[in-house]
Structures are given as C-alpha cells and as structure tokens.
Image 1 (tube, rainbow, N blue to C red):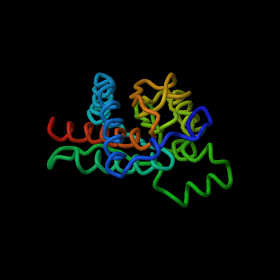
Image 2 (cartoon, rainbow, N blue to C red):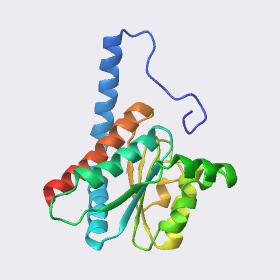
Image 3 (cartoon, one colour):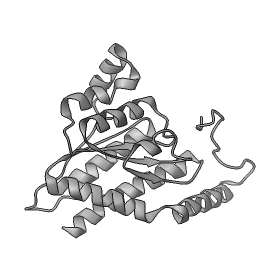
Image 4 (cartoon, rainbow, N blue to C red):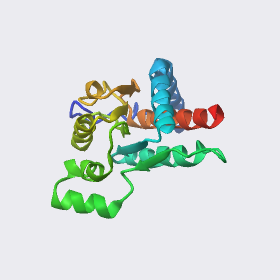
Length: 201
C-alpha cells in the first residue's frame, strides 16, 4: 500500500512485456531527472565525515528496503575500502533475524531498530534509514532516538517523504509513486556514496 492507503501503482495494464519495460524505463528516467543531486552530495559528505571522525553508520529499512540496507552496508564496508586506509564502521540493523524477531515478539515491531541502537549508538554516529513511504513506525522511533543521542540522521525516501522527511538532517527523496523505481534509485544512491568514497581516497 502507498502512503495514502491505496494499492501502489505497479504500472499501466494492457501493455506487452516490451512496452511495460519501456514504461518502467521512462518512469525511472523521470525519477532520476527529478533527483536532488545536491541532497545526494550532502549524504556523501555526511558519510565522509563519519569516516573521518571514526564514528559509525547504522543502516536500516523494512522489506525491500531491508535488502537495500544490507547492500549499502556491504558496499560501505567493502566497496568503499582502500588497502592501507582505515575502514568505515558500518552495520545494517536489518540483518540479525534472531534479534529482530526477539525484539518484535517481546517488545513490538516498532522497537526492532531502537532495541539494537540502544546499546550501539553514540553521539556523532550516523543513522541512515531507507523507506519508500517514510512512515514506518520503527524508523520514526529510530530517528527520535538518534536525535536524543546527538547522532546525525539521513534517509532515502520516496513518494512525498512521509513523516520521516522533516525529522532527518539529510533527506534524499526519490519523487516517484512506484516502489520498484524508488528502491532502484535508493540502491543507486548507495552505490554513488560507496564508489565516490573509494575513488576519493
């Protein structure tokens, strides 16, 4: 469901597979054209600053955004690494299935990320949240905890950014209502961050 509670658009019906592919490509191109590259640049700068200070990045999301979180964390630890240089400390909080299910069962799903951050997060760390809607309760609580702890916050978002957009220091908004396009561009932004960090070093 999209943020309005309606089924999200997957694309126009009645197209051939090739025409659907063209429609999807056009939708992706429109989202790329409207992407605020200055906001992407601010996200890169935030992650570079974290590395410079020896702080940590905690990435999180739900569903497809959980997979994107894992991918981004891997790229920041592996792709962005340069031999002989200090690595960045980065963890995806969407990866520990046993902790997530324990916290979800015992406390509630809204606490699956804050329960992990509670023992990890330090002032000056970066909490990077990935969300299509920007309305996931477990990300809103993570943003609140980050602010309380003096951490920096960033978010990769879609639609209109939802409730999360005004709560974070660096929002990066993909202006689309198609979840596939939103998730594609979120991953691409993660690649931009990691590959820039590698070549910049």
